[in-house]
Image 1: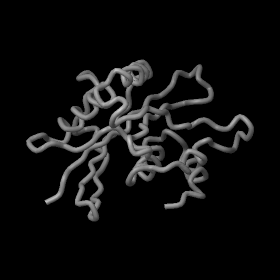
Image 2: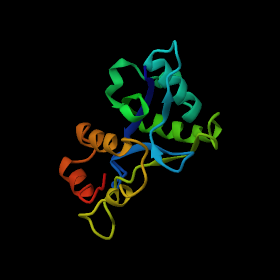
Image 3: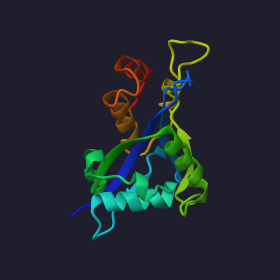
Length: 175
């Protein structure tokens, strides 16, 4: 057989007063120095959503009010070389809930062990060049598994950024 893991991209729409950042997207710096999404292995006897919600509570303090359900499911990827089925979920929170969640991460069980920090994906345009997103530099970081591709897909499919801008930012993306 193979193991199951579940990870989640959490985002919010920012207040209109925030002209530089229209959305915030959460990622984490993992213990191995790579960037990824909160989540982890689903234990035997757990369904995918229960396993995901348990992991998100341990890593980022997600409360029951914002639990993930089947309706938040985005897709699954099979990693044959490690016999892993990775299930991916996406949820939009209010800005207030998103910020509260960011602030709770420092108090979580896995802080400083599995999770080294929560970061926001830089979605703003460069102040030096309004045609350039900071995202293109962000894409040069080391991502775990297919997290970079999941991020790109969600940015486009959820209309977080215009598809053409995501494409421009990822032109030099090396797989």
